[in-house]
Image (spheres, helix red, strand yellow):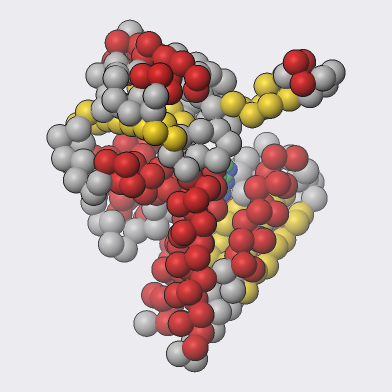
Length: 293
Ligand code: GUN
């Protein structure tokens, strides 16, 4: 059976380190790192994520600011809030929770965030730095950055020559994940909904990252024996066995089957999920360091 990768515990390590480094930074007379989280509308999953981001920021000793805006907020009003946060020296990181309501152009909002405060790593400048291997000064998107940390925990830092297959090509996970693996000298394939013979391709992977948003799509016999399986999916599915109207969380990987094949695998929940928030804290701290000079 596979080693279960305990993302919750690794995330707690990261948060502990961020907290200690924050205390050090503040003890030297610098301002607290400041994180602003903006949410528009009432999507329940987004509300849970955002509350968790704000809570962890406080736990790290950050100045934590949350803008909770009604779904009918105009694009102009949101752009004004971002301009104010860009200009606010107490704020080092700005995160606008996605998805945004349909009347707002998410791309325009992301590009309005100052690149040096773009702790999500979604701005073209940061995307470009990651794509060109300028990892020292790029903000890397939190979910792929956290996934890399988990991969390094089980495989060590040298991933050179390993075959990596990333299933999913989103800007938030799939593409940056592929770039990180490429920067680590893996041979990388990005697969997606039009990929032919996906099971056979997945079986070539020493590192298999699932980020498609389809519950339990990746079956046990798609996993090469001994592979490292990183399941980014968080899908809520009905669970009538738990009672009427009940649901449960599953990943994009059929966990029980895949765990029989894999060398190591992330569970859902408790795998990649907690890493996303931890890496957001790490990015915000890094931004505060840069601002402190
Ligand atoms: N929605 C889902 N994941 C993310 C993320 O990493 N950042 C933001 N801003 N929104 C998200």
